[in-house]
Amino acid sequence: MFSAPRRGPGPTAEELPGMSGSRGLIVGIAGGSAGGKSTLVRALRRRLSGHSVVLVHHDDYYRDLSRLPLAARAVHNFDRPSALDNRRLARDLRALAAGETIQAPRYDFRTHTRRPKLSLVRPAEVVLVEGMLLLAVPMLRELLDIAVFVDAPADLRLARRIQRDLRPARDRSVASVLRQYLSTVRPMHERHVQPSRRDADLIVTDALDARQVERVARLVRRRLARRSPGAS
Image (cartoon, rainbow, N blue to C red):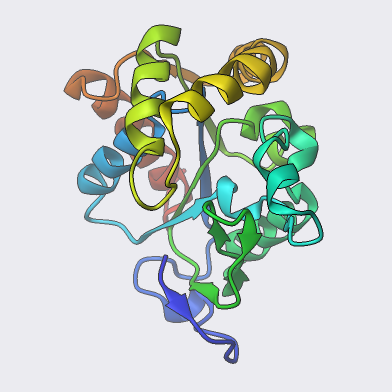
């Protein structure tokens, strides 16, 4: 995705190479926080380079907390489904699948607010949507043509989360990361994220494993081939 001001509708599916008016294939990548979802997405984009692919982040649909003081935002539970605007994401996914351009929100993780500029996301043959709670929300789960769950060990996810959240983009301390992990991340993972594993079409245990990545890419190519003109 890229930042862009509001503008008129983009090209339709009929105007995009390779789409021929067909519905975009929606591929959901779910799994625990810092479990390797982004790594898998990057690997899939490389392996699907012969197709048009766009990416939508569920995290960008977090609700704006500007109404709350900064101290309250810091202890907000971001790990439950209601923390996200799932209805808006569902509407945007339906639009992309139908060949329409959307204006996706952008989230600022330092201030826990929506950024003023939106992201213009054009339709594509493949719509990758990434988010830990995708499969835990029925209205989103039912929109996925392929559901993938990245299942990484808890200790590895925590180590990666600490590394990620200490970066300037999030500007956190180790103490605050651990406090959030124990108070909301771990219990919400056990309540919402891990049980949603059962709804996945494919389970990936190592997003760096080329064979597992290729297995996902192969399924995507197979589904695309079924939709191509002349497919039986």
